[in-house]
Length: 389
Image 1 (cartoon, rainbow, N blue to C red):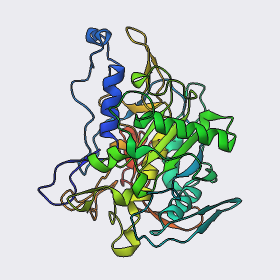
Image 2 (cartoon, rainbow, N blue to C red):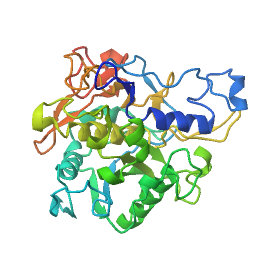
Image 3 (cartoon, rainbow, N blue to C red):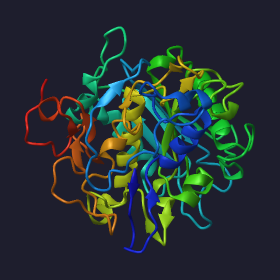
Image 4 (cartoon, rainbow, N blue to C red):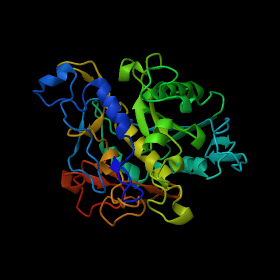
């Protein structure tokens, strides 16, 4: 969550969704379901005295808890390239040529992809399913007993949306609900994607909205977070999703190479691999983080109602500090001074092999079953201690 990147004197960089969840928590009145008795909750005051605990290079202990919401039993990722061919998408002078991306039966043509990031994200999503990395999430289930399925084919759609204007640069998370609020605009684009793809089963769908550098979430560019995922539900978060279709899970993915602090990228560039090979590391690390959190907690810790018996839409997260399976293992092993390179510790960032043989940088994911049931980060650079399952 919080990581020190860049030089030793750099300010803490918010990674990847601390700011978003802090505002989320302030809006709903509680960070986690209160542990009774907690009388201040009825007054709209958090029962948890501090915000989420940062990993800071090592995972914070403590298993995740189930709060009653659904999980994505058969995850389906719908990849949206929003505004990649619109005015202002790329810096002046960028050399661009159309590029067709084909993943199985899916195909889309990007008008510009100078770094290869668009293709890389599509390749990652096409190859993430069915891997030992994704298998970590299969231990988590919902109220009816059904578990997350580690299906090999999770990429369900590709869409280059240059029809709906990307207005993100004119928005802010702090603005009132409406056309200048970042969450409202993202929710509306997620709804447009649901209509475009003809999605009828929202419970298993994640709309992955990837933006070009010039039209990326401006809050991320200015404040240093890398991404977040959310769930559209009326009345939560000051009504930012009022009027948006209920129950859409989406992931907000700004252009990772554009997020910098002091001239240093803080979203995973070369975090695992050096040189040109690792330039796009951050895209798979961050996208992987968000899709796996969405799979195990589509409801994004949302709470409906208040008082003694609120309804929790969230699935699995930490009872102590609301960290989800990605948060608890974010940036484990990352060099805290440079933001590049990892220490050889269990759970550290590393490469995983996709289902078609591709190599992708990923972070580990929290496993309640690891370390004989005491829990630890797994899926890459696993702990040598046995699992309870």
